Length: 142
Image 1 (cartoon, rainbow, N blue to C red):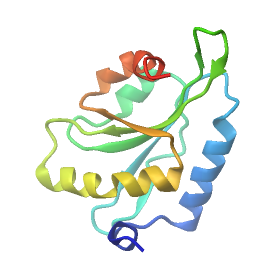
Image 2 (image 1 turned 90 degrees about the vertical axis):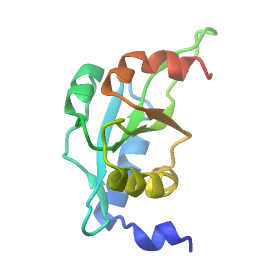
Image 3 (image 1 turned 180 degrees about the horizontal axis):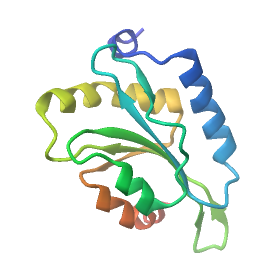
C-alpha cells in the first residue's frame, strides 16, 4: 500500500459517488463536473457539495481564489472525424495564491485522487478562467 493511500482517505460513500459519476457521465451530452476537496484535519477527500456542474462558467465561479481543488470533468467533444468522444479527466486546480501547506497537501494526494476516480489524465489549472479554454486542452490532445 502506498503512503498516500494510508495518509489520505475516501469514505465508502465517496468511493461510491466517484464510481456512479464516472459511469453516469460516459454517455452525457453536456459537460458534467464535480468538485472535491481535502479536509485539512482528517485528510479525507470528499465532494464539496452535491452539485453537478454542466456550465463551465458556473463551475469557474465556484472555485475558490486561494485554495486548491480537484475537479472531475466529463466533457463531450466532437472529433474532426465526426466521432463523439467523452474524455473523463481530473482537473487539478492550484491557484498561484494558495499557501505552501495547501499546495503540498493537494500535490501529495493528486495521484491517489486520479487512480481512485479512474480518470484518463490530469490537467493542471492555475486559475478558474482556464476553464474557458478547456475544450482546446481536451481536443488538442485527442
